[in-house]
Length: 399
Image 1: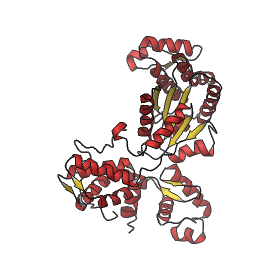
Image 2: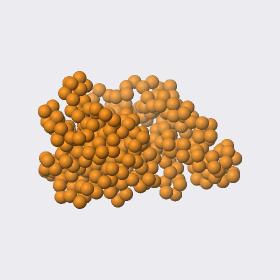
Image 3: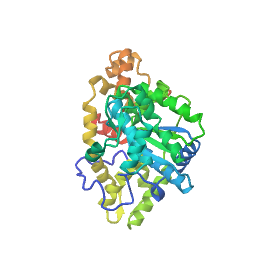
Image 4: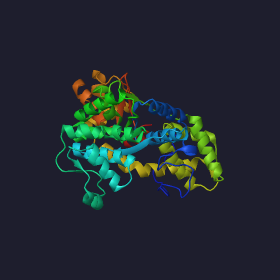
């Protein structure tokens, strides 16, 4: 599918009016595709009171797997108290603790009176309060009357297991974009205290709380869980497997048939490989194809849709490249050329990488920007399949 691009195509529709190809929200049930085993493994881990880390690039189905696992658990009769919050915009210890506590309380209570009761009983002696005016004005379930200290943090991080014990139900707390814990300035102390909480729950027969740590910045999450070894032997990483090509193709063919449309299966092989079986990109792309055709989907339809989806994402790709230094751009070109001995004198000279010491800095910079990941063999890969296609074809103009 390397030739399926037309740069003069305008994106007629970024999303069809009605389409079986869902990409703009998480899916469960009949729309959940190809990762039943991942959902089953996660469900089993939660059933065994395990804590789980899931870190994969953006838009790779993390939330759908979690929600499907919880959906399956509810069908089996498991009754969890579930809550979720994102650390995306959290920048301080106070922000984190208030969001953490608010989420936990909302899983166990529904009225202002119940909120006030939980805060007064379980957070007594801390700087956390339930302020009815703040709640009325800002929906602030937990307020702070002084800057939180270590004792406040210890009390708040134990709140979920106390609420689980009271209700007799296990709590599942999903901490999304967990890599941003480092933005609080207290990431290490928070993680250390959470480790103590996990140990206390392991020693108890109470229902307890399972934490699911999610992150879309893979390298930053690896730094926490694999380099710093936070939660060592306390958290299990669930690595999502790729959805099989044949499952994706069957999904697309059936989806088009529902709308009275037909596509040759052979045309879809290039789609799967271009997007590396990423269902979010594929459903987005195919929904554009759906909006562009009334009957047969042919190669020209795919070309037009590819031009459209590139036009949608190109500003983000340009911004990414503009954020790189010349040395970093040169390093990226070497990676795309398949180089793996970056510190050799020939490679350094050919790509203008300056020195072997600079190579290490360049690798770290590209990882920090979440453009590239390196495996245990030091082999590089770009995280975003469409970005890789765009940067090869339109930035470096490679064949």
